[in-house]
Amino acid sequence: MKRLGWALACAAIVAVVPTSVWGGQSVDEVVSFDPSIGQNPEGVATDFYGNVYVTLAPTGEMLKVDSEGDVSTHATFDPGGGFLLGMTTDWFGNVYVALASFDDTTCGVWRVDYQGNTERVAAFTANQFPNDLVFGPGSQLYITESIGGSVYRYNPWTDELDEWFTDPVLAGDIDVSPVPFPIGANGIAHRNGEIIVANSQRSRLVGIEVTGNGDAGDAEILVEDDLLFGADGIDLDIFGNVYVAVNDQNTLLRVRKNGNIKVLRDAADGLDFPATIAFGKAPGHFSDLYITNFALFSGPEGNPALLVTDVKRPGKWWP
Image 1 (cartoon, one colour):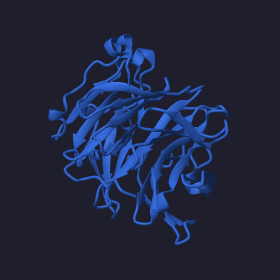
Image 2 (cartoon, rainbow, N blue to C red):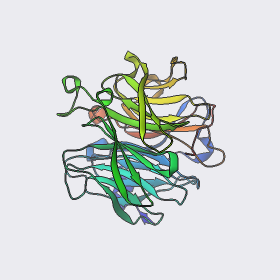
Image 3 (cartoon, rainbow, N blue to C red):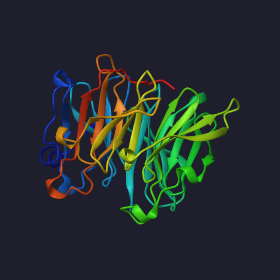
C-alpha cells in the first residue's frame, strides 16, 4: 500500500470521519480536500471489502479509503489536459476508471488491480471524453463518451471495445456547456436489461434496451425535467429507483420508475457541485450513498470532499 506523502496528508486530508459515525439522515463528511492544489474529487466507487475509491480529477490520483478510515494513494495517472473521472469495481477487487486525458496514448479505460497496478484496457482517442462506466449484462463494461453522445461496450474476457449506442438523445448542448465541448452522456447504470444514462445538458434520463444478443435496442427518454439539468453520476437502489447527483443545482435526487422526482439533499446539507455517487457494498453500508463534492467552480471557498448519507434503501450493487 502506497501511503499519502506527508505533505499531502497534512495539507490536503483535512478530516477523516471514523466509520462508526457514517450514515444517519444527515450528510457526513468522510474526507475533505484542498482545492488550492487541485484536489477536486469526481469519481467514487466501492468494493465488497469496505473500501471506497475516489478520483482527484485534475491531479490524476486515485485514493482508497479503507474500512478503518485510513487514506492511501491507490494509483496515479497523468490526466494531461483533462480529468480522471468515473469508476466501478468488479468481483475480483479490480477498479476500472475513465481517464479523459485528450491524449491518444493515455485516454480510455484503465484497470487497477488490488495492489494498485495499472493497465489501459480500452483505448479512446484524444477527441473523446470517456466519463463513467458500469458493468451490465454478461459482465460487459458499458462506458459513456460525453462528446459524441455515445455508450461504448468493453468485453473484459476478449479485450474488445465497440461503439454500442450513439444517438442524438444522448448528445449534449455546446451552448450551455461550461467547457469548450458538449457534455451529453454522463452517469450510467444498469437496471433489468436496460442501460440508463444521464444526459447532463438535456436534463434527462435515457433508457436503452439491451437485446437478447447484447445489442442496443430501442431507447426512450425515461424522464426529462429542469431538476435534472446538470445530472452527473447515477446509481440504483434495489427497488430500481435512480439516484442522481446534479452538479449545477447542488442536489441529490431520487427518481422513481414512474418519473416522480424527489430532492433528497441539497446545498444546505453541504453539497457542492456533486459529481458521482456510489452505494456501499460492505455489510453495514448497503444503504450508505457516497457522494463526491467536485466543487469545480467554487474557488478557494469551496468544499471538495467525499461525503456519505444514509438513504434508508439498500443499493443495487450486482449486475
